[in-house]
Length: 170
Image 1: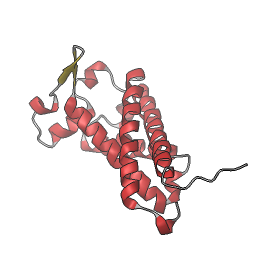
Image 2: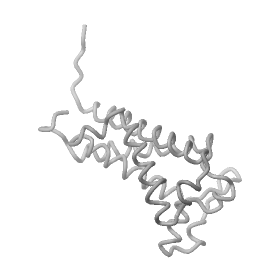
Image 3: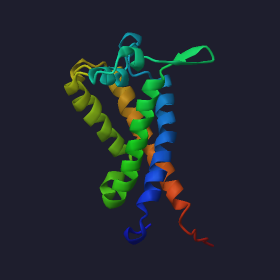
Image 4: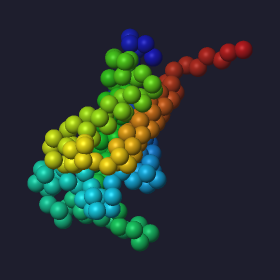
């Protein structure tokens, strides 16, 4: 899609859908490679951040039950809100700044991880300083963010390609 006929609304929609899909991928990744110990996950970073903003623990730790598992719906709202917001941002901004799309979003994902988990969240006191986080946390979060953004890229590109006329080749 050339810059002349770029549809920002379609890009926001495609990026948001891609963010939902990639948000599920990131959750699956963390199921296989948990970034935090059970003790540190008793209050996960989204819950901690909300509590720092004054949201009561009763709400930040609210759950719903599915198949006898208590699941943190407030954390999921933040998780998917983050993922859809970044999906929409990446899809629109990547059109105007193609540098963001180098590596099909993998470098962007690594940058989001570094900015959030090594700088912003430690500075806010939401997570420990980067040097105090275990290697397993760094590896899980780094590769989880790389996978998350790659899936965002692939899904958004495919959704936007649906709007292009396809040329059949011989």
